Image 1: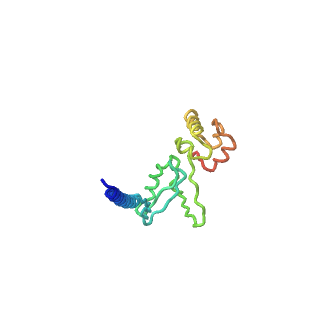
Image 2: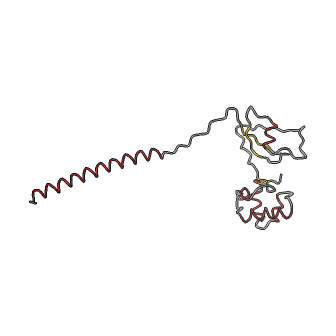
Image 3: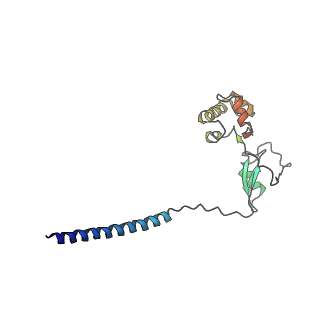
Length: 171
């Protein structure tokens, strides 16, 4: 082959490679753009429940805490959600407190007599070992009569009790 033909052949091969690379790059770009669009994540807000409100139930119920009430639910439904009444419940004296919009919501307390390890571990400075020690203590000695009894649990001293006392209950 003469050198002129070789030059044309190499020019043709180079041009063909340039076209193939250009088409491939364009195809990859289009696929990448479509892929990125498919990966777009949106977190829709849950639909608002008309007339629903959060209600805090405490006192002589088995599971005090926050529950949702709507116009179709009764007080009896809420008491059922809270595990029912305890034996000493006085149903003739029910308190209802509707806070103003400027009041700070009351923190739900963790019942150290019924809470599982995972829930106890949400307390400040209470890890798996301390949570296990609380559960072991109440298993051996029965339920706590008051929060100060936590001082009898290995791993809980006065400083730790002071930090968690407003977050716990024995009711």
